[in-house]
Image 1 (tube, rainbow, N blue to C red):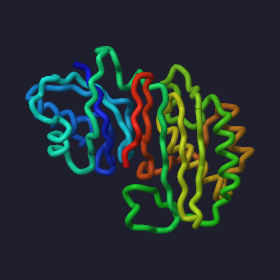
Image 2: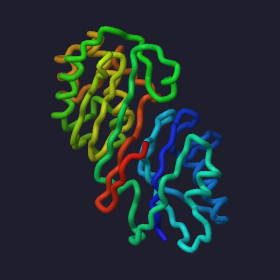
Image 3: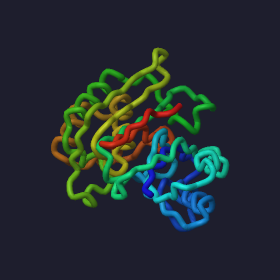
Length: 255
């Protein structure tokens, strides 16, 4: 029977979600142990790919799993998995055609960043060695993003897509009261390759005064590429896939 598995992971030690030859991936880790638990080869299909080092505070996969198990599969699978992957629920889905990737109607990402060296945050947030950022300019850029429909300029390899339009439902940039941390959040119907990490890098450029709001707007409006030195992506450390919504399934983020 078709099931959705609700889970989360810290991506620091993995080469991303997708199974890759001779590389440690989140998919392969779960798939291999799930197959061992069920004593049959079991394939899981994720709600999307995350790059090497990227995290997920909420993630769903679908898989075909027997219903008549004589043990608690969540408890057993959690016992088998490493500490950086957690299974929250295994949810029966009575439609065998439900798909964790293509049925999602909204996805949210969060990017955590800090500006004072804090060792405890090294695996959960990105440290940017900058100070005196122009937060007002960065938040003005966020408003521009809210009104943007085509994200070609903020995508790595845009020609792999039929189109690069995304429907952004919400986007924000919040600063802590001490000014040493920020959280960038965005929800949309779809995301493009490296889109969030490109956005965060450009926001930092704007905050440092290296890129003006007019330049930022012109590149995006004309669907140009950001050229050197504005082509680097933000590191993966602070990036989290944080929420997935389906027409038939929504769960609170745990933690």
